[in-house]
Length: 195
Image 1 (spheres, rainbow, N blue to C red):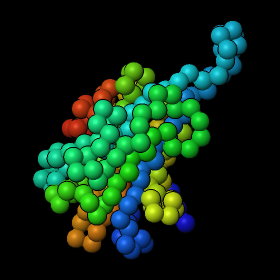
Image 2 (spheres, rainbow, N blue to C red):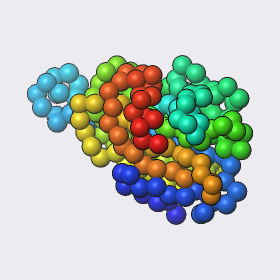
Image 3 (cartoon, rainbow, N blue to C red):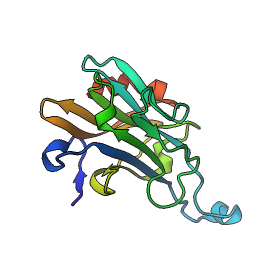
């Protein structure tokens, strides 16, 4: 049974998922639907497309960035992390972008994986609905946990969640920390601050 996390909540992955080795972070969102006013009807109504980009930053225990995966680099240096590709609209049901992680193949120095979302076109989160990050066991497609971002605002980036490795294995923390940035480069500093 999937756990719905609240902002700041963490769960141990190793405790309830022994032998967990391959996971994916599915990130989804929808454009805010218009209110259906005169201009909306005149120009076809509905929602506009939202181009958010999901990324993962990999840090060592000293918070040094050692790798990243994003829409411009779809595979980590050793191939343990892969990005399924860029979604330019946010339309449709389910995950809009997926980042797969083989925990057993990660660089031995990897201690933190921070999952971010940023608005490449500069659209704000006032224009985004239903932003969600969900962690899924990639071997059986069972959702382990999810975090729904409920806050709107004029920010253009969010640090959604992180996976961190401790003495007792991996844990996931929901963050929902607002940031400003059109690319993952702009979110490195705030990502370090949450781990």
